[in-house]
Image 1 (spheres, rainbow, N blue to C red):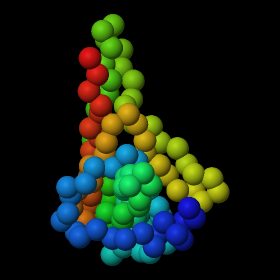
Image 2 (tube, rainbow, N blue to C red):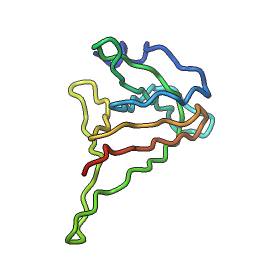
Image 3 (cartoon, helix red, strand yellow):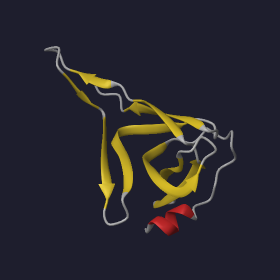
Image 4 (cartoon, rainbow, N blue to C red):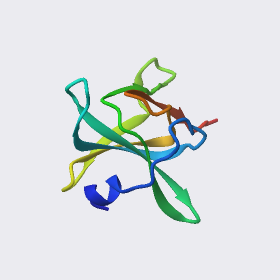
Length: 119
């Protein structure tokens, strides 16, 4: 999908935080927030009826992330969540082995990662 198509995704109700997402997209909107920074569309990607669906969670100018690290028995750590950039749109994408939760829509929003449990 193109940036324009993704920005046309349905917008969830501001306080509907029940859905978990397989990926989260960060899409610059080109709109200026009252703070002077640009609004970023947080778009959750989930699978419904075997097809990817997109849902805009909000348009904050500030985002906090809560991504736990994977800790190995030798004490080393590595990230659960990775980010890449979709070409040519420049959309940033968080992905990992687990689900993402996105907070209520406001000028500051949180993204939390819930890793898959492993034995």
